[in-house]
Amino acid sequence: MAAATYLPAGDMAVVVQFGETVDPVINKNVRQFCSALAALKLGWIIEIIPTYRSALIYYDCMKVQWPEMLKTLEGVASSPPSTGPERNKVLVIPVQYGDDKGPDLSFVAQHSGLTEAEVIKIHTAPKYLVYMMGFSPGYAYMGGLDPRLFVPRLGTPRMSTPGGAVVMGGTQTGIHPTETPGGMRIIGRTPLRLFDPSKEQPFLVEAGIMVEFKPIDKDEFDRIDKAAVEGTFEPEVYYEPERV
Image 1 (cartoon, rainbow, N blue to C red):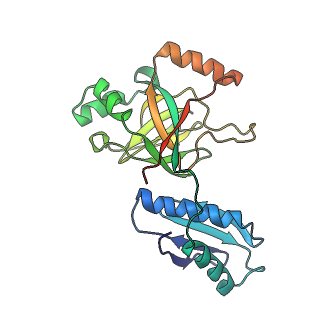
Image 2 (image 1 turned 135 degrees about the vertical axis):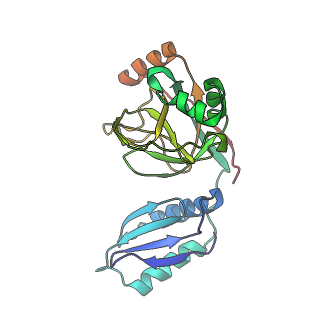
Image 3 (image 1 turned 120 degrees about the horizontal axis):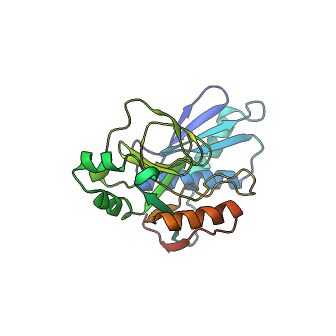
C-alpha cells in the first residue's frame, strides 16, 4: 500500500491521505486501507469514510490518544493488502435515454457536436469505476467519462431531479438514487432502485465496483420498472479481471 499522510481534523477525526489526484490506483489504496482498518474492529473507531483519495476516520478521543492511534493507522497503511481474487464486479445499469426520461440529451449532443445516438454510444462504451459514495444515500461518484461528453452543469440547479435520473456535468456522470435537487444534465433514467431502506443491503451500488450502462427502450423500461416495484428484478452482474 502507498505511503500516507495524516492530517488532524478537529479533536475527534483524522484524514488519511494517499495522494493528490483522482486516480484508480490511489482510490484502490484508500479502499484497501479502509477495509483492513474496519476488519480490526477497534473499539475507539466511530466511523470510517472513504473518499476519492483519502479516508476520514472519526475516533473516540476518550478511548485512544493521538500517538497510539497514529501508530495503528500507520501500521495498517504500511501493511501489504490481503490477497484475494483479482476480479472486478461489474453492475449493468439499464437506461432509457432521451425523450421525457432524458430532457438534456439534446443539449449534450449539441454542445458536444454529436448526434444523440453518438452520445448514447459514447456514454455506454466505458465501464465506470465507483470511486466513492456520497451527496445523498446511494449516490455513486464514478470516473471514466469520455472527454467528448464533458458539458457544463446547469447555471441554476433544478429543485427536483427524479430518482433514477442518469446525469452528467463537468467531468462526471452519475445516477440520482432518489428525488433530490441537482445541477447536472439529465440524459436518461434507469428503472432500477439504487436505494431501498427496507432491504438488509439498502444500496445497489458500492465503492470499488464498476458500472456499465445499457440502453433500453420504453417497453423494456416499463417491464423492468414493474418488476423492480414488485421486487422480482435481479440486475445483471458479471466479473472480469481486475485492471488496477
